[in-house]
Amino acid sequence: MTDNSGEAWHWSPAPPDTETYVNVGDVTVDSEIFSVRRRDADGSYHYEWVTGPNPDYGFSIGSQLPLDFTREQHEVQIRDFLSGIDPNTGYLGD
Image 1 (tube, rainbow, N blue to C red):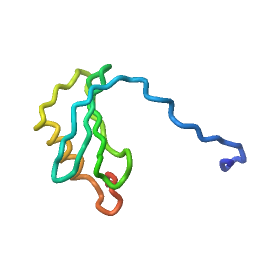
Image 2: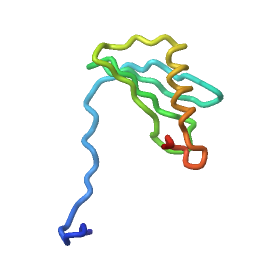
Image 3: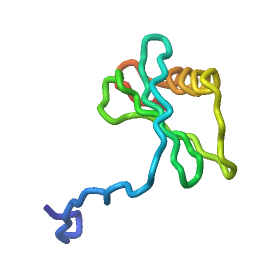
Image 4: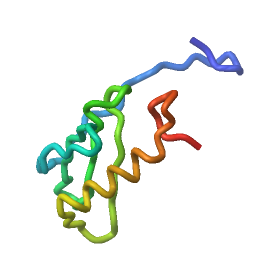
């Protein structure tokens, strides 16, 4: 394939994730299931929308300080994410 200048380009996958994570568990909100993990290096949380329409879609929350969320705080973050989802695409809307 080429770009607009006629230069050839090649797709390559992202390198493997070498970070380590702790599995926090699944959190269900409004019948939607999210798999939650916490990255060891910085304490950030990563939410994969297991029951969502788009494979491997979700969101992450980080901070300059490690976070220590309760289950209720995870639910609040997930509800906020879901409130921004475009029902037609299954992705965050504008």
